[in-house]
Length: 224
Ligand code: DER
Image 1 (cartoon, protein in one colour):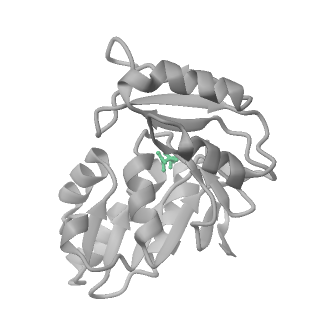
Image 2 (tube, rainbow, N blue to C red; image 1 turned 90 degrees about the vertical axis):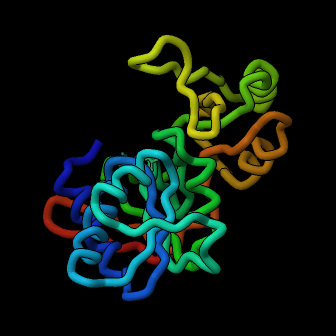
Image 3 (tube, rainbow, N blue to C red; image 1 turned 90 degrees about the horizontal axis):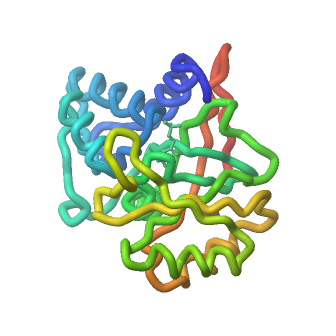
């Protein structure tokens, strides 16, 4: 993965787009965390910003950083969403490393502008990262079988400091589905969405508006 300096540079560059009065979608992961901290600094300087968190983790961090929170049903619009990615290729993303992609996709897709914050290790010519798929617990075997029929290899995401599987904020499980190189993410995304028991998958195609890539000496900004 990238360095903290690269991640912080990407995050702080994206946060420059935050203006007084905005509602901002708060992404999940270590890169988005730097954005939440930077938004906390703006609030401390007197800016009126409300954050819509995408996970338990981003909600707790926003609280610690003093970012006022709003729920999705309290806001009319989300001006900007700032979120990380596990892989970026030609504007399409794989997300879900933090198992938060169900709520992330709701917020990121609803936002008027979706800004992705990344480091060079995330950038690729084609998507090849295993695709996280959140499933209803009872559907884990039927979805795994369907993923196999689609040419993928589904692996139940096990927890690190808990026996058994990772359980999402929504109480579901995650299958990490390795399809190898994904030549055309759109159709695969549609196939995954149609599988019974799939809550959400981590292919974010056609959603991102700008990619901020933090490098060792600056930030590359890719307008999509
Ligand atoms: O879970 C997610 O979707 C995160 O945004 C993830 O994709 C990126 O996390 P990172 O910034 O810690 O690499």
